Length: 325
Image 1 (cartoon, rainbow, N blue to C red):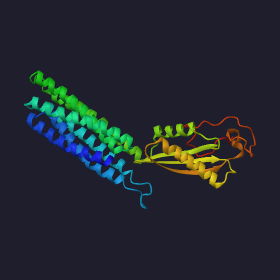
Image 2 (image 1 turned 180 degrees about the horizontal axis):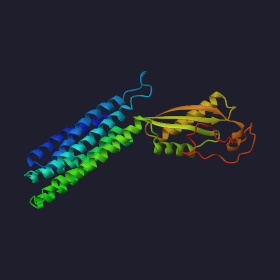
Image 3 (image 1 turned 135 degrees about the vertical axis):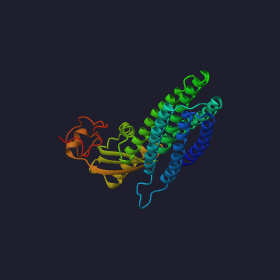
């Protein structure tokens, strides 16, 4: 699914680039030229994106035990950088056109071409974002955000060019002014994509995903799950990797402990649409944790239950058993 969508995005970017280039040739508008330059970024990003999602879809091997999902972060970083470079080029072209304005022509025809390109970008972008979120693909989400931003920029271009048409090119500087606004939007979009990709490379915690995991486990908590700590959640492409230490009654047999791990794994899998891999370390409970344990009729209880610790994002990631001290 992800590969097919990325392939369609690449084909669309090539077609739209050709259309915008034709619109620039017909109108000599620097605003349309900058939009066409953005099309070059779209094509390069589409090629890199298609390569990365194809690579990310490969199964794990001995050299890549966590899979190839991080290839998407690298490609997204390149795309974000290219988008920011395009923004800087647009600023340069806009300023030069302000200093040395040129005559505009055939603006009506240029408007039609740019309007169709913008509409197609917007529809494709929303679809790519939706499918990217469903498949946890940062490349697809980045490509979709880029297309939607491109569509917004196209809308600004259309407004500026429409004013020029209605005023019979009375304010030629407006063409460059719209281009500079377009450049600012482009720079912001590129920065956001680059920031997110670098966060993924550095295994930065996805707080929303972590909070959802905690919410699911807390809501479906079993009495024999005395404690949970050292929880880590990392996304590698479509694979969500979860590490945690689960504290169980120390007297459980290995087969019973294995069942508890399996139940926890199934619980998390059922709550997420992507593939989940769990590494659970089992800890035996300690006497000081009796006050937190809701296990009924425990034969080894040293003190009565005071209150279960409610797991949250502040206490569940610490590398220490709860209840001591």
